[in-house]
Length: 310
Image (cartoon, rainbow, N blue to C red; front, side, top):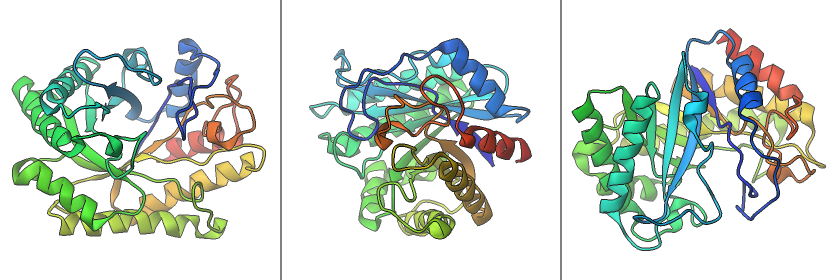
C-alpha cells in the first residue's frame, strides 16, 4: 500500500473554510518534513488542490494548496492533483479544459493522478453544492482520459466520495460518466474520518474504517464500477486540540491504516494533513502530524515508522 499526504496550508478553517490568520507555508521546512516522512519508500503521493471557479474567474477565499506542487516533486514522488469544481454557473466545457491542464501539469511533475471533482456527495463548500457538478465532472473525466491518452503519459484519472457510500450517489455518478468513462476509471477515492465528525469508541475505529471501504466496494460494484478498479483512501485524519489528545491521534491513525490495509482493497492511503493550519487548540485546525511551527506530534514518527515498514 502506497502512502501520501497533503502538505499545503490555506488561510482558512479546514472544516468550514472560514478565513483564518495561519502561519504561512515554509517550503524548505515542508520539504524536509516530507523527506523524513517518506523515508526509503520507493513512491509517495503528494496531494494537492486546485479550484475551478469558472473560466477566467479568481479563487476567492481558497487558493491552490500547495501553491506550487512542483516544490515537492522529485524522485519517488507522485502528484495527486484534485481538480475541484466550484463554478457558480454550469460550465462543463471550461472545466474540461481545466482538467486537461491538470493532466499536463501532473505529467510535467513526473506523473501521478488527477482526481476529477471533490466530494460531490457533500454540499457546499464541497463540490456537491455547485450547479452542474455531475455534468462537469463527467466532461472532466472524459477530457482527462483523452488528454492522458493523447500525451501517452502516466496520469491516473478518478473520482471520489466521502463517508458511507450512498447507492443513489454512485448510481448518479456512473450514469453521468457513461459506460466508457466508468470502465476506464483508474481509481475511486474515499475521504473518511472515523471518530472525527461522529464519535465512535476507539476500539471500533478499525472496524469502522473497514466498513467504509467494503461498503464503497459493494456500492460502486452495483453501480457498474469494476471490482478491479483500485480504491484509494484519498483523505483520512484525526485532529488534535484542547479536547483531543495527541497520543490518541497516533493510535487512531495507525489503527485506520492497518485496518484498511487488511481489507486488501486499498492500494493508496493518503493523510490529511502534514501540518496544522494553526495550532490554536481548536480541533478543526489541528489535523496535522506537525504543529504549525513544524514541531512533530507523536503521530508524525508513528506514521513515519509505519510507512517505512510498508
